Length: 130
Image (cartoon, rainbow, N blue to C red):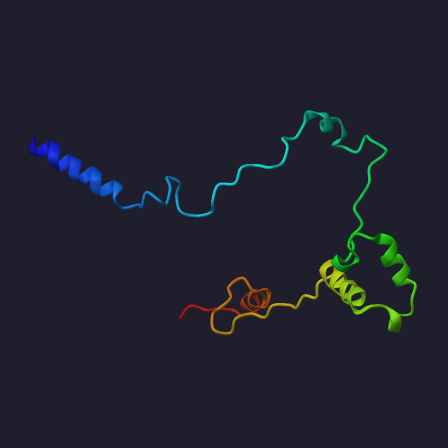
C-alpha cells in the first residue's frame, strides 16, 4: 500500500509540472497542418527539362506589384526621372549578385601554423639542435 501511494505521488507530481492548458505538445513552434498539396508523380518526367514550354520567373521589385511592363517602361526613362525604389532595387540586386568581399587578415595574437608565409619561413630557416 505504501509503494502504491509513493508511486501515485510521483506520477501526480510528474503530471503537475505542465499546465493542462498548455497542451500535450512540447514547447516550441505550434503544429501547423500542411496547406500545400502533395507533389504528384506527373512532374517526374520533366525534371531534366524535357518539356519545351518551361518559363522562368522574372525578378521584379516589390513596389512593381508583379507588373513587368511597368518596370520596362520606367527603365526607359532617364535616371533622374526614374523612381527611387527602382534605382534602389537595382543597386540591391547588383549587390546580391556580386557581393563585395574583403580578404581576411591573420590573427596576430595566435601563431598560425598553416599560414603559407610561416611555412616558407620555416623551410628557409635552418633550425639546429644544440
